[in-house]
Length: 397
Image (cartoon, rainbow, N blue to C red):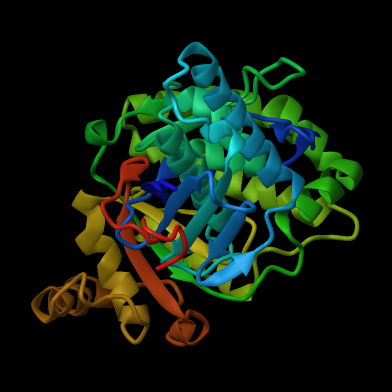
């Protein structure tokens, strides 16, 4: 029996305008629109290979080397939607293999920790949907496929595009207009970079889905956020991105991160995704911006304590003079930067900034950060020549 195989990589995206709360849990329809930056896949990506054959006995998923259940409703909904689209093609062309009736083998691996606030489910479901769509040779575009990825993980829909992406919440009850669209292609603001400070690789105390339900049910601030704050901010942030206005983009990004975590704290009982180290990073970012009397860096925190710091490439020396001074003992600077470059950051701090600093610098901050991931805005899903499935057996290599 023939084994058909395809492989795709998909990126992580980090929201600058947060999605939090569902108006329909079954369809993963959000209570507000959101915006994100897609990150480069060198450091943060999911690689997924999908295979199908008439000989396969059951749908099977292997994630990071372990066989995982495919029985959860979210995954089944994604697979069924993709099979329905394939069935439409087969009904129009009798010569096509009846893949829609065959079982699937899916092998997936991340190059970053799962369930640690680094949006692993977004990259995972995006890669799954795109890999199977490629396997089935589906003609649908990325926005149409994003509706399917959304059912698996809400933020996954945004990982179907590169650059700067909006997830429009839509109005239809069936979710047909709740999808991702590109706000600005990567090549039009490729100077956007990101430094991720990994505060914890541990799983979250409160999973995102559970946290959302609690916030929607108990937070008074939540209604103000979805009815007034986010709709206005959605328009403003799209405009800032299109105009490449980093100052406005940064202000809105930081305010929205604060607003999101305020609704978590306003939940009852309160949800704590950021911790004391996160708060120290927030203070540091505001201190650095005040030092330069301009906004050169913005923080955002998803449902976890890890900080994502956005900045423009032109301001890297300014920012890294401070970050490297405080975090030079943290893993992740090399091999992205050689010794000469790192010594340059150190020299800028010692010779240009040190004597002018008036704010407190916590020289033990590095003790609470496990590593730094240095990355930038990146492209959407990519075809991959690397395959995780043996094309003869249909099993993981």
